[in-house]
Image 1: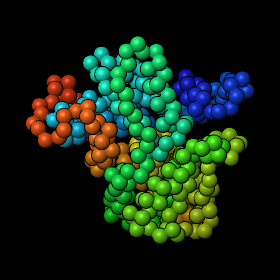
Image 2: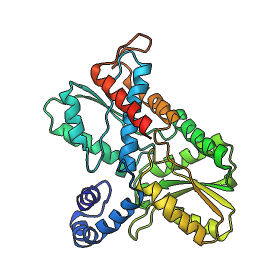
Image 3: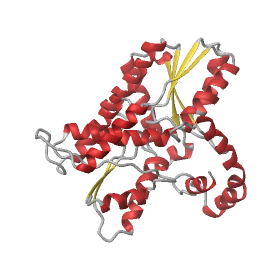
Image 4: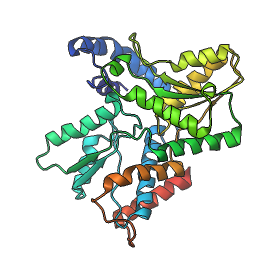
Length: 333
């Protein structure tokens, strides 16, 4: 955990405190106390296949390749990287270049743009290009927070859950928080989260009284975007709310923040405050509706790079191997 946290928390996009001050805090306090606590949290959500985030991200990559192969006469290579840790952006781009890839479409898997998430992911690509003598052609997506296919995938995921488990009194949509200062400096993240929440609520037919948009994962003493998720759950618990469901539309794959912070800690907060029934609705993960939506998001950005859909296409041997692996993963779930 220590190398991961050091890389993550030293990112200037993530923590904007002056470097000398932050170096002392990070190396003198945080890296000596937080790794053990974080390791315990990760252990509580670990699965036989390993990290849920890595598992579902790999699944999304493989299934997206399969979806694009169905739609396009010449399917692109699809691969994934992690912003921090392994597999790194540099490693994966080097591997793609070794395969002959000379056109690169970068998709940060953050629906809402924040400098500390999407911006940082794109930084990793741009910084690598600065050191590359002959870089590939580059395109990048900024966000997809209001894309109709993304909103539709969220709606279908939630409605499917409700069809099986019934409906709540209140739906909480919890997004990862960022410091309030980022909004004041012009970061669009807060507005994009609010828009996602509004569009999703409208598509679900919810009134303003039936849902809340909140922000989780705050760190340190500074003010972060409000309302806070934990305080909202505590408030709903004290109000003796019969049932609360919580979804995390900003996370396209389940991870520590959804499985531990929300499904475990959030549940305890709500129940201990006097609430009734608590349900965590899983992220989009590898749901077919999400893979289909992801292809809808990407296709316009591939215009001019690949032949138009309509012709017959035989996948390459490399792609066939990827598709077999995708089916094997699906069969083992």
